[in-house]
Each structure stands twice: as structure tokens, then as C-alpha cells.
Length: 303
Image (cartoon, rainbow, N blue to C red):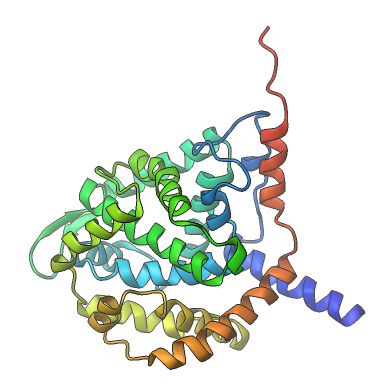
């Protein structure tokens, strides 16, 4: 029993350090009392369920990075400005903090995080390898990054959540509506708000997507990432699982050849087991508990 307790604590500490930098910063979620948050969602809502599922978010997150890389201008910005190669853990922590804060944090905390990202975006601009200029605050690019991200998160949840907990078609539409305000606050325009709109958007933009050398290099980097043998093993499992979340055309464009039988009979079961281990080690989410307390607390009386 002591061995299990020690193992659980060790895995939980490593997970917290890798995803949250060791500090959950619970003050973002604790108050002010009665604050409903930016998305105005409650526990049990689709956005809460999707963004609160560790395995779905980790696999969906890796899938999102690969899918986003297929837009040459978005990839140029990452390749020329991001520190994901020199500090991949720092990049992961910043991304996780943004998603958890905008989903579960108070509205002031979410607005502060969005303002920070908007300031960073104003400095990310340049020229892609094909000679086209780009800037990270381009509304069209922001819509692409958001849509690729949330569709991947939803695919991860629908694949790795227990069957009885998966979203209905109507709830999938609700999910897209609930998360759209984050993209719009960042400057995105014409953000898809339903499964049908996402499908139509991806069909429209697909002719503009292709795997540049930078995109293929980023995928190779992700597949080999890890500071320790155990971290590399977990990342390898999650990356293999994320490949199964990509559309067939995206896998083909990236040159990823992983047979369907391997994806379904090996990658998915192994990722499910690893994910359950991580969830067991983490235990009940402190972030979710803090958000629940904030929302359930009566707001202060005026005067």
C-alpha cells in the first residue's frame, strides 16, 4: 500500500510539474465569489466535460498541434517565433494555463490571460518561406488555430471518455458555441459554432493546407520529445494516439503511415490505460473544485 501511495504521489507531482509548472495558481479559480467565468458554463456542461478530461485533452492537444501545422502561415509563425523547441515544457505550461483559466477561471482571470496573449500576438509577424507575410493577430489565422484546436479536443474527448459520458450531436454543437467566445476575444472572426459549421470550414480551408518542411520537422520533434525515459514513453503513447484523431487527409499530408488496425487495436487501448493511470494519480481536480466553490459562493452584497 505504501508503495502505491508513493507511486501515486510521484506521478501526480510529475504531471503537475509538466502541465502546470508545479503551481496550479488556484487563486485564478477561487474568486471572486459568484463569478460565472468567461464562458458562463456550469459543471456538466459540454465545455466543462471536454476540457476537464485529461486523456482527451492531452491526445487532442497533440492532434491540434499537428493539424495546425498544416497551415503554412500559422506554421511559419510558430517556426520563427515560438520557443517550443528550446522550451517545450514551458510552451505546454503556457498553453495549459490559458485553456484552464479561460474555461474554469474567473472572468477577470480569463480576460487577463487573453490580454497577455493578444499582446504577444502583436509581436509575432514576418514572412513565410513562400514569400507571403503573416501576423499572429490576423483574424483568419486565429479562426484556423481555434477551430483546429477545439475540433481536436472534442475528437479526443469523444474517443477517450467513457462511452456513456460522450456528447450527443446536440451537445457537440453546444460545445462549439460555448468555446467560441475565447476565440472571438482573441480577435477571431466568423468562428464556427456547430459541428456542421466546423465541417464546412475545414472543407473550405483544406485547399490552403499543406505540410511544409517546418511542419514535418515539428511533428518529428513532438514524437521524440521527453526529458526522461518515462516522459518520452508517455509522450510516445499520447502522440501515437493523437495520430488516430487526425482526419485521414491530414495524416496523408503529414506523411504519417500508421495502419488503422494498429491505431484501433494498440494505440487506443494503450493510451486509455496510460490516461487512466494519470487520472488515478491526479485524483479529483483541485482546479475544478476551486471553480465550483467560486461559482457556488454568493456574490458580495452591494453597499
